[in-house]
Length: 108
Image 1 (cartoon, one colour):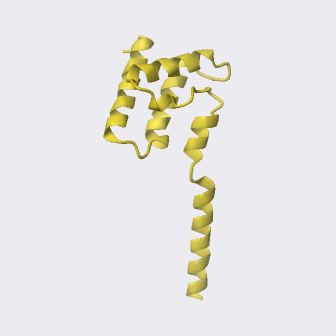
Image 2: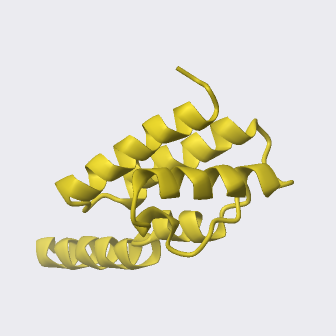
Image 3: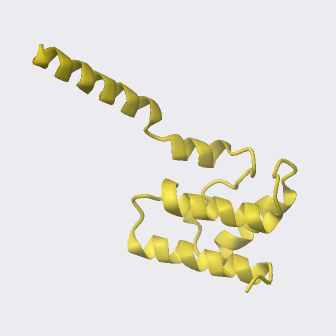
């Protein structure tokens, strides 16, 4: 009886994992708030990332908040969830992109 329970529990876990494995990637790619440029988070410099996010936020008509908040939210989401396995160098670049975004919107 104990073996049956273990097998069922293992089957449930593996099924759930396969259906929700990349939900953050799905959100990043299909977000209703912003239509992002391809590879926006892998661009060369922090300033390029910030400019791309600003451009996407300002041209979006689907966002419910200010362009600054939408852009910052998407960047923070990527750092916290989508970029879970980021290297230290990439994470530092994305954190610098936050500072660049604040500077672009005069939010210091």
